[in-house]
Image (tube, rainbow, N blue to C red; front, side, top):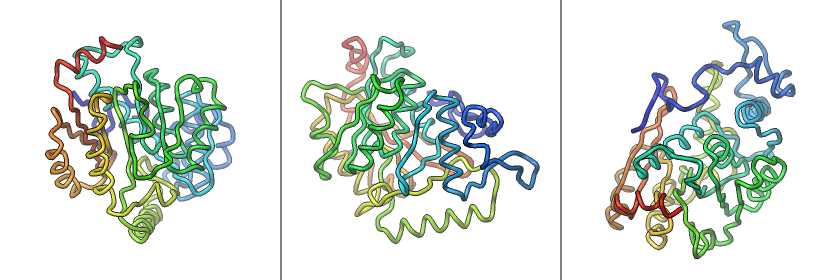
Length: 313
């Protein structure tokens, strides 16, 4: 069901090869000043330079996803696009399994991105690659304003993505999912650190790794606000809350999904899932180089209901 390449990326991921910086500079000339030859004689950028990475993301979005205007506030999370793309493709695999057939444009797939962030990456990729509709929610007003600006300034996104403010940080789905609204999936990249100190230590490790190795980096985040990087109890506490609250919306969402950064988090997550008794639980491993993350997905609907979901529209 879940296809990978030798490099670990999903077979449908457009970012299998090394970055073609000549093509990227053609799509976004503003990238040119940041591109230079590395010690191996290959064109690259300084991946420890946050401005260079931001410009690379702008070029990737323009070149592959026809998003010409993309900017995020200073200090907010600048995500690694190839890994984010993988999450979207693995969700597509889940939906194909549910339908029992290939997805079609008239399937009218709609997804919910919990914590859409200032960057709005998942809805951008999902709407561009698959034509899906999205709702993106966030508790941070700056993130909501930034994501809305990105959507408003790119005509290809205006009819595909809606951004909603979650005014109660204790709620994940309530106040976001409307009474008669249905989603084929929800997705989330939760804050996985347990404290500001743990988040800071992770950033320091990242910077040390960058100083040791200047090769192209595909799996590193840059920047990030507190609500993007950490919460009390880390990813386990956040995901357990999501699992408990998903029960209330069990018939409105076909697949609830979340990223899990740490393997040691899985045991507590599985225990929480057992308490709410979903019909199906899937764990999907994603690998980019040495970095391994996981998607945990659960559904309260039986197989027959999965098939009927797409017929209902």
